[in-house]
Image (tube, rainbow, N blue to C red; front, side, top):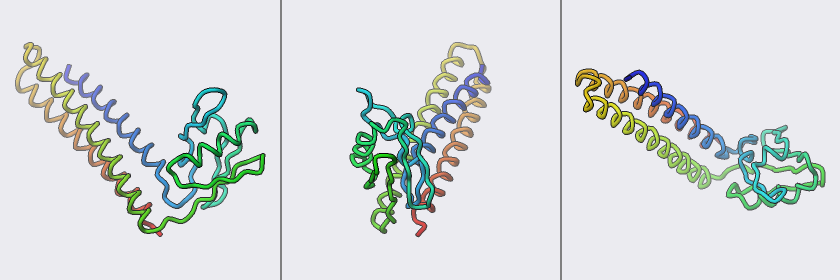
Length: 185
């Protein structure tokens, strides 16, 4: 029973961790990366779709993204979506592809991005702690029902805390790496 709770909690914490890693990868570091824009929602075919479902996104140079829509009629809506985003990018197109130059970051913008990375990571910590709390409640409930002993409950609580600490450390390590990446000139 305890193993099932631990397994389920581990899966949920891993999903939270991966989600935060994906969000952090979308933060601009001054280098071109397709993950920077692939999540942008584009108004296409009467609905909003992620950019990566409408085009191929490449980074042929360290400071340039090239977006090649599969349907050229979507160039205008993709350009609008990039301009409307909070990324501060200015796309240009030649009716075939969209080129997005990535400007270098100034010190103020770097600090702003670091604050954003901290905020995103804190959301991850909150999520991990939420899953810890839920697992702890499940353990206490099955102990109250007499399905496990108090000693087993305490062991389970200890294992869940160790799992929580592990994921918080992983989040902190990812944050530190991203922070170094952002502050690198």
